Image (cartoon, rainbow, N blue to C red; front, side, top):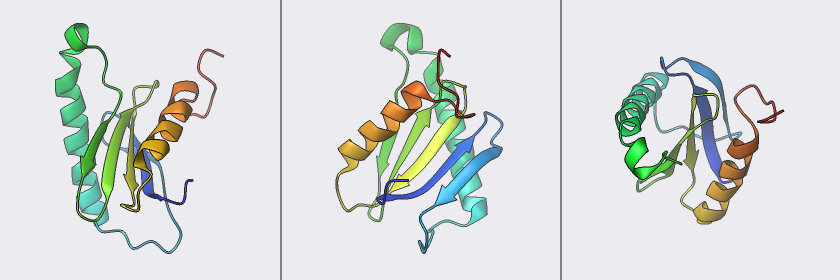
Length: 115
């Protein structure tokens, strides 16, 4: 995991966390319950965006910027969502490019897409 990534979780469309991890010795700002609430909001937001895909194309990711961190939500090829929080130290564009490159070739199970 990139050192600027604070937390990452993969969730299915029901909100069940399938995998998660955080940077060692990182104080998480949200409780598990608040994280779950955030996940449900992200799932709802992505579901509402899908109805416009035929007109504007599929969503690649969303990025929310807060005072203490940045949160990206990325739809995975498997249909699941990846939620990533990133430090505000800078380099977010490069981090997002790394994440998106991984998402393009790997799904939630870690298998290569198209294989």
